[in-house]
Image (cartoon, rainbow, N blue to C red; front, side):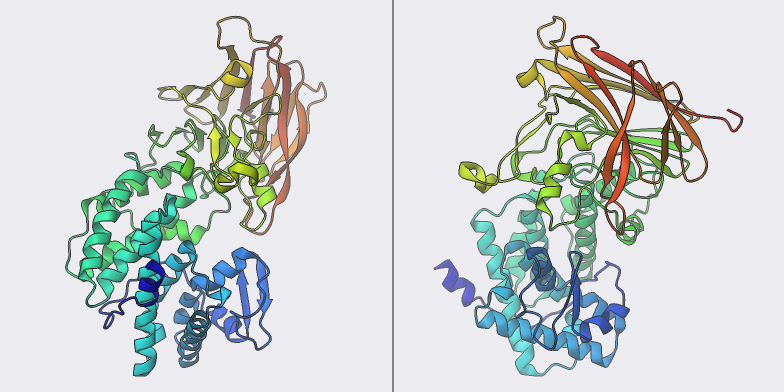
Length: 533
Protein backbone atom coordinates (compact mmCIF):
# COMPACT_ATOMS: atom_id res chain seq x y z
CA UNK A 1 0.00 0.00 0.00
CA UNK A 2 2.87 2.38 0.75
CA UNK A 3 4.40 1.62 -2.66
CA UNK A 4 1.08 2.37 -4.35
CA UNK A 5 0.82 5.61 -2.38
CA UNK A 6 4.31 6.55 -3.49
CA UNK A 7 3.56 5.94 -7.15
CA UNK A 8 0.34 7.95 -6.88
CA UNK A 9 1.86 10.77 -4.86
CA UNK A 10 0.01 14.06 -5.21
CA UNK A 11 1.89 16.46 -7.44
CA UNK A 12 2.25 20.06 -6.29
CA UNK A 13 0.66 22.63 -8.60
CA UNK A 14 3.73 24.81 -8.99
CA UNK A 15 6.91 26.01 -7.36
CA UNK A 16 6.69 29.37 -5.65
CA UNK A 17 10.36 29.95 -4.79
CA UNK A 18 13.73 28.32 -5.29
CA UNK A 19 16.22 27.86 -2.43
CA UNK A 20 19.71 29.20 -2.97
CA UNK A 21 22.47 26.67 -3.60
CA UNK A 22 25.47 28.10 -1.73
CA UNK A 23 27.90 25.42 -2.86
CA UNK A 24 30.64 26.64 -5.18
CA UNK A 25 30.06 26.00 -8.88
CA UNK A 26 32.49 25.78 -11.82
CA UNK A 27 31.00 26.84 -15.17
CA UNK A 28 33.77 25.09 -17.12
CA UNK A 29 32.41 21.73 -15.98
CA UNK A 30 29.26 22.46 -18.01
CA UNK A 31 31.28 21.92 -21.20
CA UNK A 32 32.51 18.54 -19.93
CA UNK A 33 28.96 17.47 -19.15
CA UNK A 34 27.75 18.54 -22.59
CA UNK A 35 30.58 16.49 -24.13
CA UNK A 36 29.46 13.44 -22.14
CA UNK A 37 32.12 13.42 -19.43
CA UNK A 38 30.91 12.89 -15.86
CA UNK A 39 33.32 12.85 -12.92
CA UNK A 40 32.33 11.54 -9.49
CA UNK A 41 34.14 9.78 -6.64
CA UNK A 42 37.49 10.06 -8.39
CA UNK A 43 36.28 8.41 -11.61
CA UNK A 44 35.67 10.06 -15.00
CA UNK A 45 33.36 8.32 -17.48
CA UNK A 46 32.64 9.19 -21.11
CA UNK A 47 29.11 8.23 -22.10
CA UNK A 48 30.02 8.03 -25.83
CA UNK A 49 26.61 9.32 -26.83
CA UNK A 50 24.62 7.11 -24.47
CA UNK A 51 22.40 8.42 -21.74
CA UNK A 52 24.60 8.75 -18.62
CA UNK A 53 21.91 6.90 -16.65
CA UNK A 54 22.18 3.83 -18.91
CA UNK A 55 25.92 3.17 -18.83
CA UNK A 56 27.46 0.72 -16.39
CA UNK A 57 28.73 2.90 -13.50
CA UNK A 58 32.34 2.35 -12.38
CA UNK A 59 31.30 2.35 -8.71
CA UNK A 60 28.30 2.80 -6.46
CA UNK A 61 29.68 6.14 -5.30
CA UNK A 62 29.91 7.32 -8.92
CA UNK A 63 26.33 6.24 -9.59
CA UNK A 64 25.13 8.06 -6.46
CA UNK A 65 26.93 11.23 -7.54
CA UNK A 66 25.28 11.08 -10.96
CA UNK A 67 21.78 10.37 -9.62
CA UNK A 68 22.11 13.06 -6.95
CA UNK A 69 22.21 15.84 -9.58
CA UNK A 70 24.44 18.13 -7.53
CA UNK A 71 26.33 18.78 -10.78
CA UNK A 72 23.40 20.86 -12.06
CA UNK A 73 24.88 23.86 -10.25
CA UNK A 74 27.78 23.88 -12.73
CA UNK A 75 25.31 24.13 -15.63
CA UNK A 76 23.51 26.96 -13.88
CA UNK A 77 26.81 28.78 -13.35
CA UNK A 78 27.49 28.57 -17.09
CA UNK A 79 24.17 30.41 -17.65
CA UNK A 80 23.95 29.76 -21.37
CA UNK A 81 20.96 28.62 -23.46
CA UNK A 82 22.87 25.41 -24.18
CA UNK A 83 23.40 24.74 -20.45
CA UNK A 84 19.70 25.31 -19.75
CA UNK A 85 18.64 22.97 -22.55
CA UNK A 86 21.16 20.34 -21.49
CA UNK A 87 19.99 20.46 -17.87
CA UNK A 88 16.35 20.03 -18.85
CA UNK A 89 17.18 17.20 -21.25
CA UNK A 90 19.19 15.31 -18.64
CA UNK A 91 16.42 15.66 -16.04
CA UNK A 92 13.92 14.42 -18.64
CA UNK A 93 16.19 11.46 -19.42
CA UNK A 94 16.38 10.56 -15.74
CA UNK A 95 12.59 10.74 -15.37
CA UNK A 96 12.23 8.43 -18.38
CA UNK A 97 14.59 5.91 -16.77
CA UNK A 98 12.64 6.22 -13.51
CA UNK A 99 9.31 5.67 -15.27
CA UNK A 100 10.70 2.47 -16.77
CA UNK A 101 11.86 1.29 -13.35
CA UNK A 102 15.53 1.42 -14.29
CA UNK A 103 18.05 0.77 -11.53
CA UNK A 104 19.98 3.90 -12.50
CA UNK A 105 17.10 6.00 -11.17
CA UNK A 106 18.36 5.17 -7.68
CA UNK A 107 15.65 5.73 -5.08
CA UNK A 108 17.98 5.13 -2.15
CA UNK A 109 16.88 7.64 0.52
CA UNK A 110 20.27 9.37 0.69
CA UNK A 111 20.42 9.80 -3.10
CA UNK A 112 16.75 10.78 -3.32
CA UNK A 113 17.33 13.48 -0.71
CA UNK A 114 20.27 14.95 -2.60
CA UNK A 115 18.36 14.88 -5.89
CA UNK A 116 15.33 16.61 -4.39
CA UNK A 117 17.50 19.35 -2.85
CA UNK A 118 19.33 19.80 -6.17
CA UNK A 119 16.17 19.94 -8.25
CA UNK A 120 14.54 22.47 -5.94
CA UNK A 121 17.57 24.77 -5.86
CA UNK A 122 18.18 24.45 -9.62
CA UNK A 123 14.52 24.59 -10.67
CA UNK A 124 14.97 27.94 -12.49
CA UNK A 125 17.63 26.29 -14.64
CA UNK A 126 15.50 23.21 -15.30
CA UNK A 127 12.17 24.92 -15.93
CA UNK A 128 13.14 28.03 -17.88
CA UNK A 129 11.66 27.62 -21.35
CA UNK A 130 9.98 24.32 -20.48
CA UNK A 131 6.59 23.49 -21.99
CA UNK A 132 3.56 22.68 -19.86
CA UNK A 133 3.89 18.93 -20.32
CA UNK A 134 7.45 18.92 -18.95
CA UNK A 135 6.45 21.24 -16.11
CA UNK A 136 3.64 18.92 -14.99
CA UNK A 137 5.88 15.87 -15.33
CA UNK A 138 8.54 17.56 -13.23
CA UNK A 139 6.01 18.54 -10.54
CA UNK A 140 4.71 14.97 -10.42
CA UNK A 141 8.24 13.66 -9.97
CA UNK A 142 8.87 16.12 -7.12
CA UNK A 143 5.76 14.79 -5.41
CA UNK A 144 7.04 11.26 -5.84
CA UNK A 145 10.36 12.27 -4.25
CA UNK A 146 8.50 13.65 -1.26
CA UNK A 147 6.46 10.46 -0.92
CA UNK A 148 9.56 8.25 -1.11
CA UNK A 149 11.26 10.20 1.66
CA UNK A 150 8.18 10.22 3.87
CA UNK A 151 7.90 6.48 3.41
CA UNK A 152 11.60 6.06 4.31
CA UNK A 153 11.07 8.05 7.50
CA UNK A 154 8.11 5.85 8.46
CA UNK A 155 10.24 2.78 7.88
CA UNK A 156 12.87 4.02 10.32
CA UNK A 157 15.41 6.02 8.31
CA UNK A 158 18.04 6.90 10.91
CA UNK A 159 21.30 8.73 11.50
CA UNK A 160 22.22 11.90 9.70
CA UNK A 161 20.31 10.60 6.64
CA UNK A 162 17.11 11.19 8.61
CA UNK A 163 18.06 14.79 9.37
CA UNK A 164 18.96 15.65 5.77
CA UNK A 165 15.77 14.00 4.49
CA UNK A 166 13.74 16.23 6.82
CA UNK A 167 15.62 19.28 5.51
CA UNK A 168 14.64 18.28 1.97
CA UNK A 169 10.99 17.70 2.89
CA UNK A 170 10.79 21.04 4.71
CA UNK A 171 12.17 22.79 1.62
CA UNK A 172 9.69 20.98 -0.64
CA UNK A 173 6.80 21.99 1.60
CA UNK A 174 7.94 25.63 1.62
CA UNK A 175 8.73 25.89 -2.08
CA UNK A 176 5.72 24.12 -3.60
CA UNK A 177 2.18 25.45 -3.65
CA UNK A 178 -0.36 23.35 -1.81
CA UNK A 179 2.03 21.49 0.48
CA UNK A 180 1.58 23.57 3.63
CA UNK A 181 0.66 20.45 5.64
CA UNK A 182 3.96 18.83 4.63
CA UNK A 183 5.81 22.02 5.57
CA UNK A 184 4.28 22.08 9.06
CA UNK A 185 4.82 18.39 9.75
CA UNK A 186 8.40 18.28 8.44
CA UNK A 187 9.26 21.48 10.33
CA UNK A 188 8.11 19.91 13.59
CA UNK A 189 10.05 16.71 12.91
CA UNK A 190 13.11 18.68 11.82
CA UNK A 191 13.11 20.67 15.06
CA UNK A 192 13.05 17.46 17.11
CA UNK A 193 15.82 15.87 15.05
CA UNK A 194 18.05 18.94 15.29
CA UNK A 195 17.64 18.89 19.06
CA UNK A 196 18.72 15.27 19.04
CA UNK A 197 21.64 15.46 16.60
CA UNK A 198 23.19 18.90 17.20
CA UNK A 199 24.82 18.90 20.62
CA UNK A 200 24.76 21.89 23.01
CA UNK A 201 28.30 22.92 22.04
CA UNK A 202 27.48 22.79 18.30
CA UNK A 203 29.06 19.49 17.39
CA UNK A 204 27.20 16.74 15.57
CA UNK A 205 26.38 13.60 17.50
CA UNK A 206 28.40 11.55 14.98
CA UNK A 207 31.55 13.57 15.89
CA UNK A 208 32.69 13.99 12.25
CA UNK A 209 33.80 17.59 11.43
CA UNK A 210 32.74 17.12 7.79
CA UNK A 211 29.16 16.51 8.87
CA UNK A 212 28.99 20.03 10.31
CA UNK A 213 30.01 21.54 6.95
CA UNK A 214 27.57 19.33 5.03
CA UNK A 215 24.67 20.22 7.31
CA UNK A 216 25.42 23.95 7.26
CA UNK A 217 25.43 23.96 3.46
CA UNK A 218 21.86 22.64 3.61
CA UNK A 219 20.60 24.41 6.75
CA UNK A 220 21.69 27.90 5.71
CA UNK A 221 19.60 27.88 2.49
CA UNK A 222 16.67 26.41 4.44
CA UNK A 223 16.86 29.32 6.87
CA UNK A 224 16.70 31.72 3.93
CA UNK A 225 13.75 29.80 2.47
CA UNK A 226 11.68 30.26 5.63
CA UNK A 227 12.42 33.99 5.46
CA UNK A 228 11.52 34.17 1.77
CA UNK A 229 8.11 32.62 2.49
CA UNK A 230 7.57 35.00 5.40
CA UNK A 231 7.49 32.14 7.90
CA UNK A 232 9.36 31.87 11.17
CA UNK A 233 12.08 29.25 11.10
CA UNK A 234 12.03 26.89 14.09
CA UNK A 235 14.16 28.10 16.97
CA UNK A 236 16.07 24.82 16.90
CA UNK A 237 17.22 25.56 13.35
CA UNK A 238 18.46 29.05 14.19
CA UNK A 239 20.14 27.94 17.40
CA UNK A 240 21.81 24.96 15.71
CA UNK A 241 23.39 27.16 13.04
CA UNK A 242 24.59 29.64 15.66
CA UNK A 243 26.28 26.84 17.63
CA UNK A 244 27.74 24.93 14.69
CA UNK A 245 29.71 27.82 13.22
CA UNK A 246 31.96 28.35 16.30
CA UNK A 247 32.44 24.59 16.47
CA UNK A 248 33.92 24.66 12.97
CA UNK A 249 36.55 27.08 14.22
CA UNK A 250 37.56 24.63 16.95
CA UNK A 251 38.40 22.06 14.29
CA UNK A 252 40.19 24.52 12.03
CA UNK A 253 43.93 23.91 12.11
CA UNK A 254 46.67 26.43 11.42
CA UNK A 255 46.79 25.67 7.68
CA UNK A 256 43.05 26.30 7.29
CA UNK A 257 41.97 22.65 7.04
CA UNK A 258 39.90 20.75 9.57
CA UNK A 259 41.31 18.23 12.03
CA UNK A 260 41.28 14.61 10.88
CA UNK A 261 38.94 13.04 13.39
CA UNK A 262 36.13 10.48 13.08
CA UNK A 263 35.74 10.25 9.32
CA UNK A 264 37.18 13.59 8.25
CA UNK A 265 39.17 13.47 5.02
CA UNK A 266 40.21 16.16 2.58
CA UNK A 267 38.91 19.60 3.55
CA UNK A 268 37.20 21.39 0.65
CA UNK A 269 38.42 24.98 1.21
CA UNK A 270 35.56 26.55 -0.72
CA UNK A 271 32.96 24.68 1.36
CA UNK A 272 34.60 25.70 4.63
CA UNK A 273 34.95 29.31 3.49
CA UNK A 274 31.30 29.40 2.38
CA UNK A 275 30.08 28.09 5.73
CA UNK A 276 32.26 30.43 7.79
CA UNK A 277 31.23 33.45 5.70
CA UNK A 278 27.81 33.16 7.35
CA UNK A 279 29.31 33.52 10.82
CA UNK A 280 28.34 37.10 11.61
CA UNK A 281 30.03 36.99 15.01
CA UNK A 282 33.47 36.10 13.56
CA UNK A 283 34.20 34.73 17.02
CA UNK A 284 37.44 33.14 18.16
CA UNK A 285 37.71 29.38 18.00
CA UNK A 286 35.90 27.44 20.70
CA UNK A 287 38.39 25.81 23.07
CA UNK A 288 36.25 23.46 25.15
CA UNK A 289 33.59 21.24 23.58
CA UNK A 290 32.71 18.75 26.34
CA UNK A 291 29.50 17.45 24.72
CA UNK A 292 31.17 16.72 21.38
CA UNK A 293 34.33 15.42 23.07
CA UNK A 294 37.02 17.77 21.74
CA UNK A 295 39.52 20.15 23.33
CA UNK A 296 41.69 22.85 21.76
CA UNK A 297 44.90 24.44 23.07
CA UNK A 298 46.43 27.61 21.60
CA UNK A 299 49.78 29.28 22.09
CA UNK A 300 50.80 32.21 19.89
CA UNK A 301 51.08 30.75 16.37
CA UNK A 302 50.50 27.14 17.43
CA UNK A 303 47.31 25.17 18.02
CA UNK A 304 46.37 21.66 19.08
CA UNK A 305 43.06 19.78 18.86
CA UNK A 306 42.53 16.61 20.87
CA UNK A 307 39.83 13.93 20.71
CA UNK A 308 38.51 13.53 24.25
CA UNK A 309 35.21 11.82 23.55
CA UNK A 310 33.62 8.39 23.65
CA UNK A 311 32.28 6.84 20.42
CA UNK A 312 28.94 8.21 19.18
CA UNK A 313 25.71 6.22 19.50
CA UNK A 314 25.79 3.11 17.34
CA UNK A 315 23.54 4.36 14.53
CA UNK A 316 25.82 7.40 14.10
CA UNK A 317 29.10 5.49 14.39
CA UNK A 318 29.43 4.14 10.86
CA UNK A 319 32.29 6.51 10.06
CA UNK A 320 33.64 7.14 13.57
CA UNK A 321 37.21 6.19 14.44
CA UNK A 322 38.99 4.50 17.34
CA UNK A 323 41.14 7.57 17.94
CA UNK A 324 40.39 8.49 21.53
CA UNK A 325 43.05 10.86 23.01
CA UNK A 326 44.67 11.38 19.60
CA UNK A 327 45.67 14.94 18.70
CA UNK A 328 46.77 17.12 15.80
CA UNK A 329 49.28 19.95 16.13
CA UNK A 330 50.06 22.87 13.83
CA UNK A 331 52.63 25.64 14.15
CA UNK A 332 53.16 28.77 12.04
CA UNK A 333 50.52 27.54 9.60
CA UNK A 334 52.35 24.23 9.14
CA UNK A 335 50.90 20.85 10.12
CA UNK A 336 53.27 18.82 12.25
CA UNK A 337 51.43 16.00 14.07
CA UNK A 338 48.37 14.58 12.29
CA UNK A 339 46.09 11.59 12.12
CA UNK A 340 45.98 9.58 8.90
CA UNK A 341 42.53 10.86 7.93
CA UNK A 342 39.81 9.07 5.99
CA UNK A 343 40.14 8.15 2.28
CA UNK A 344 37.53 9.13 -0.26
CA UNK A 345 34.45 6.97 -0.66
CA UNK A 346 34.89 3.90 -2.81
CA UNK A 347 37.68 2.09 -0.97
CA UNK A 348 36.08 0.33 1.98
CA UNK A 349 39.18 -1.65 2.96
CA UNK A 350 41.34 1.45 3.28
CA UNK A 351 38.59 3.31 5.09
CA UNK A 352 38.30 0.54 7.68
CA UNK A 353 42.08 0.50 8.19
CA UNK A 354 42.15 4.24 8.85
CA UNK A 355 39.51 3.84 11.55
CA UNK A 356 41.92 1.79 13.68
CA UNK A 357 43.71 3.29 16.66
CA UNK A 358 47.08 2.73 14.99
CA UNK A 359 46.13 5.27 12.31
CA UNK A 360 45.94 8.00 14.96
CA UNK A 361 48.46 9.93 17.01
CA UNK A 362 47.81 8.18 20.27
CA UNK A 363 48.77 5.10 22.31
CA UNK A 364 47.93 1.59 21.07
CA UNK A 365 47.97 -1.47 23.36
CA UNK A 366 49.04 -4.78 21.76
CA UNK A 367 48.23 -3.54 18.24
CA UNK A 368 44.56 -3.53 19.27
CA UNK A 369 42.11 -0.72 18.58
CA UNK A 370 40.37 0.90 21.51
CA UNK A 371 37.03 0.32 19.71
CA UNK A 372 35.50 -2.78 18.16
CA UNK A 373 33.73 -2.53 14.81
CA UNK A 374 30.88 -4.75 13.61
CA UNK A 375 31.85 -7.03 10.73
CA UNK A 376 30.16 -6.75 7.34
CA UNK A 377 29.10 -10.40 7.31
CA UNK A 378 27.24 -12.89 9.47
CA UNK A 379 24.63 -11.84 12.00
CA UNK A 380 26.24 -8.39 12.31
CA UNK A 381 26.11 -7.62 8.60
CA UNK A 382 23.09 -5.36 9.01
CA UNK A 383 25.08 -3.10 11.35
CA UNK A 384 28.33 -3.36 9.39
CA UNK A 385 30.85 -0.74 10.40
CA UNK A 386 29.07 0.35 13.57
CA UNK A 387 31.14 0.66 16.72
CA UNK A 388 29.90 -2.05 19.08
CA UNK A 389 32.38 -1.50 21.94
CA UNK A 390 34.80 1.22 22.96
CA UNK A 391 35.63 3.79 25.63
CA UNK A 392 32.69 4.57 27.89
CA UNK A 393 34.27 7.10 30.25
CA UNK A 394 36.62 9.83 29.02
CA UNK A 395 37.03 12.32 31.91
CA UNK A 396 38.97 15.50 31.14
CA UNK A 397 40.69 18.02 33.42
CA UNK A 398 41.59 21.28 31.77
CA UNK A 399 43.75 24.26 32.66
CA UNK A 400 44.54 27.27 30.52
CA UNK A 401 47.35 25.59 28.58
CA UNK A 402 47.16 21.94 29.68
CA UNK A 403 44.90 18.88 29.46
CA UNK A 404 44.75 15.60 31.37
CA UNK A 405 42.37 13.00 29.93
CA UNK A 406 41.84 9.27 30.33
CA UNK A 407 39.86 6.60 28.52
CA UNK A 408 38.83 3.05 29.45
CA UNK A 409 38.80 1.52 25.97
CA UNK A 410 41.41 -1.04 27.04
CA UNK A 411 39.95 -1.77 30.48
CA UNK A 412 37.89 -4.84 29.64
CA UNK A 413 40.45 -6.61 27.43
CA UNK A 414 43.69 -5.64 29.12
CA UNK A 415 42.77 -4.19 32.50
CA UNK A 416 44.41 -0.86 31.54
CA UNK A 417 43.39 2.79 31.53
CA UNK A 418 45.18 5.15 29.15
CA UNK A 419 45.96 8.59 30.56
CA UNK A 420 47.40 11.38 28.41
CA UNK A 421 48.70 14.68 29.83
CA UNK A 422 49.58 17.41 27.36
CA UNK A 423 50.55 21.08 27.61
CA UNK A 424 51.39 23.82 25.09
CA UNK A 425 53.55 26.79 26.03
CA UNK A 426 52.09 30.27 25.67
CA UNK A 427 54.60 31.19 22.94
CA UNK A 428 53.79 27.99 21.01
CA UNK A 429 57.41 26.81 20.97
CA UNK A 430 57.06 23.80 23.27
CA UNK A 431 54.60 20.92 23.35
CA UNK A 432 54.99 18.45 26.22
CA UNK A 433 53.12 15.26 26.94
CA UNK A 434 53.03 12.07 28.92
CA UNK A 435 51.26 8.81 28.18
CA UNK A 436 50.60 6.51 31.12
CA UNK A 437 48.91 3.13 31.48
CA UNK A 438 47.14 2.56 34.80
CA UNK A 439 45.89 -0.82 36.01
CA UNK A 440 42.16 -1.02 36.70
CA UNK A 441 42.75 -3.06 39.87
CA UNK A 442 45.22 -0.64 41.46
CA UNK A 443 48.18 -2.98 41.06
CA UNK A 444 51.16 -2.72 38.77
CA UNK A 445 50.11 -2.89 35.10
CA UNK A 446 50.37 -6.30 33.44
CA UNK A 447 53.11 -6.86 30.90
CA UNK A 448 51.24 -5.84 27.76
CA UNK A 449 53.21 -4.32 24.86
CA UNK A 450 52.14 -0.92 23.61
CA UNK A 451 53.21 1.72 21.13
CA UNK A 452 52.90 5.50 21.15
CA UNK A 453 52.38 6.59 17.54
CA UNK A 454 52.74 10.20 16.43
CA UNK A 455 52.00 10.53 12.72
CA UNK A 456 53.75 13.39 10.93
CA UNK A 457 52.53 15.42 7.99
CA UNK A 458 54.02 14.22 4.68
CA UNK A 459 55.54 17.66 4.00
CA UNK A 460 57.87 17.34 7.00
CA UNK A 461 61.44 16.07 6.73
CA UNK A 462 62.33 13.62 9.49
CA UNK A 463 65.70 12.28 10.64
CA UNK A 464 67.06 10.63 13.79
CA UNK A 465 69.86 12.25 15.74
CA UNK A 466 73.24 10.56 15.77
CA UNK A 467 72.64 8.97 19.17
CA UNK A 468 69.23 7.65 18.10
CA UNK A 469 67.52 9.18 21.13
CA UNK A 470 65.75 12.07 19.42
CA UNK A 471 64.07 12.99 16.14
CA UNK A 472 64.74 16.17 14.16
CA UNK A 473 61.77 17.45 12.17
CA UNK A 474 62.08 20.19 9.56
CA UNK A 475 58.99 21.93 8.21
CA UNK A 476 58.59 23.41 4.74
CA UNK A 477 59.07 26.93 6.09
CA UNK A 478 62.50 25.92 7.45
CA UNK A 479 61.45 25.74 11.10
CA UNK A 480 63.08 22.87 13.00
CA UNK A 481 61.58 20.90 15.87
CA UNK A 482 63.25 18.36 18.14
CA UNK A 483 61.31 15.40 19.51
CA UNK A 484 62.61 13.71 22.65
CA UNK A 485 61.20 11.20 25.09
CA UNK A 486 61.99 9.38 28.32
CA UNK A 487 61.89 6.05 26.49
CA UNK A 488 65.20 4.25 25.86
CA UNK A 489 64.61 4.25 22.09
CA UNK A 490 62.58 6.19 19.53
CA UNK A 491 61.88 4.90 16.04
CA UNK A 492 60.71 6.22 12.68
CA UNK A 493 58.25 4.10 10.70
CA UNK A 494 56.25 4.51 7.51
CA UNK A 495 52.79 6.07 7.58
CA UNK A 496 50.23 7.25 5.05
CA UNK A 497 48.25 10.48 4.84
CA UNK A 498 44.82 10.48 3.17
CA UNK A 499 43.94 14.17 3.43
CA UNK A 500 46.00 15.56 0.54
CA UNK A 501 43.86 17.18 -2.14
CA UNK A 502 45.24 15.12 -5.02
CA UNK A 503 46.00 11.65 -3.63
CA UNK A 504 47.10 9.65 -0.61
CA UNK A 505 50.71 10.40 0.26
CA UNK A 506 53.40 8.43 2.00
CA UNK A 507 54.45 9.88 5.33
CA UNK A 508 56.39 8.94 8.44
CA UNK A 509 55.52 8.49 12.08
CA UNK A 510 57.41 8.62 15.35
CA UNK A 511 56.93 5.37 17.25
CA UNK A 512 57.88 4.48 20.83
CA UNK A 513 57.59 0.78 21.67
CA UNK A 514 57.39 -0.20 25.33
CA UNK A 515 55.84 -2.66 27.77
CA UNK A 516 53.30 -1.63 30.39
CA UNK A 517 54.83 -3.90 33.01
CA UNK A 518 58.30 -2.37 32.68
CA UNK A 519 57.57 1.18 31.46
CA UNK A 520 54.02 2.21 32.37
CA UNK A 521 54.66 5.89 31.53
CA UNK A 522 56.57 7.74 28.81
CA UNK A 523 57.13 11.49 28.78
CA UNK A 524 57.81 13.19 25.45
CA UNK A 525 58.20 16.68 24.00
CA UNK A 526 58.38 18.72 20.80
CA UNK A 527 60.67 21.76 21.09
CA UNK A 528 61.17 24.40 18.42
CA UNK A 529 64.86 25.05 17.83
CA UNK A 530 66.33 28.51 17.47
CA UNK A 531 68.09 29.31 14.21
CA UNK A 532 71.47 29.02 15.90
CA UNK A 533 70.73 25.63 17.49
